[in-house]
Image (cartoon, rainbow, N blue to C red; front, side, top):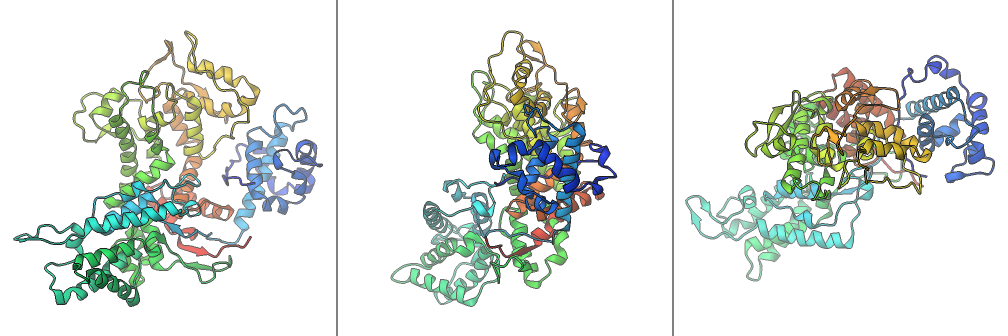
Length: 632
């Protein structure tokens, strides 16, 4: 049973009775009797509902070995969903608190005492975004050939996860076609020479060659080109034998009446279909030995860093530092340089597109009769606003709370009209104060409000789930089977909130909806495409609510304040987790929990600055080292 490893660090204020006695709670004496009393009727003594048999866990060590299942059980317990409400024999409130508190303590103790483990990332091919970016930076051409590739699979919320980046026969064919098209586009036969040089040369040729090239100097020119080009394409130093093999292709292509450029095209095509180009290699001396842990060499570190912050290849400066063995010594300054480089926008678009679901704008199609003002241009403006806010926080090293609390945004005239903000002229985006405007932070952006709506109306469920999952990292449980759909036709004088309350009256639905709905209702002043409104179906909208953890709010501003104050640890931890997954290219495991906790503490001590988030991840054990794979 594969269960996501999502850790909820519960404060002692939730479990006051355990604040001093948790270490004295014993599994055999205190926990096992509760399991026998309340759980075995469904999950023990021969019963295995949902494929779960709890009577196999007879010691604390058994629980720790089954950490994946017990993390899920812990969520059920603190949600009051285990045992289910229809079961008559249920633990008291204090018993539930004892079981949840002990489970959290036992698992955390296990994580902290486990030996350091950097984990292992599968050898990864470049995904579509990375391929396009590398072609741009390596070939000096404005061309996106990977847009024609099959869509990348996603894992753990991101499409750069090594385990799911497979290579199909169709993709191999696409690689060959793309390589030929790229080589043809960037290598042209020079024609007439003018005072400005050869007028038909591409940017690629101007970067790598100095024309005119005399016939007797062509081999030397090709050799110099390949030495530089291969180093960039393979993201490491290259051998003379690698260069010589390609020189053979250059010569073969120019023989039999072909030109020097024909030979270069053949060599470049070969490079672009080479596994050295298409994959990010981190070789192991003992790949099947999980105890074989090593630090990345500096070329591997340069690649991890560049693909993390630029979604592209390392530049010459990173490769030069790697060659001299100086990259780690200069890592913080290089991170800051890379963040302020324009190429970091690749990371901004990629990370926000997946963490915040902005890519869903591409497939969102609102009902044109209900939302006639929603256009393709407005959709791109919405996406751009959110990306620019994140880029602003990133490049200016601001507090990551600003993503939630910013009382400003980046808008143009079209988006301003949509937001009912006056005196904004021109299609260019500019920083605009949002004082007295209900648009604070990411949660007030049209992009997020739109992708969390249904085509014909708002969706408090989707919006509430978005905050729980994407912002706080506490996703609700999936709905049980055969849950009836919510009726969407509102009666006259009835708000969507009133309809949702009917749905919530269903006992099967109530446990999850009591978490999601209050949050979702806080957004009801925004319609299905993020326009501000005061009424729904002719009735005044009520945006007040109480979270299942007891905090009350009157509307979106109060909810945002709760996120960056009382829920700050959850928000910060979730952002750390999301960015670690994105940076590492793999899901997180129990041995990563110590690292997550360390980064959260480091951020708190450093004022939650965004640079500190990036630096902490790059300097962490999982990013800087790797190990072999355990055999199964």
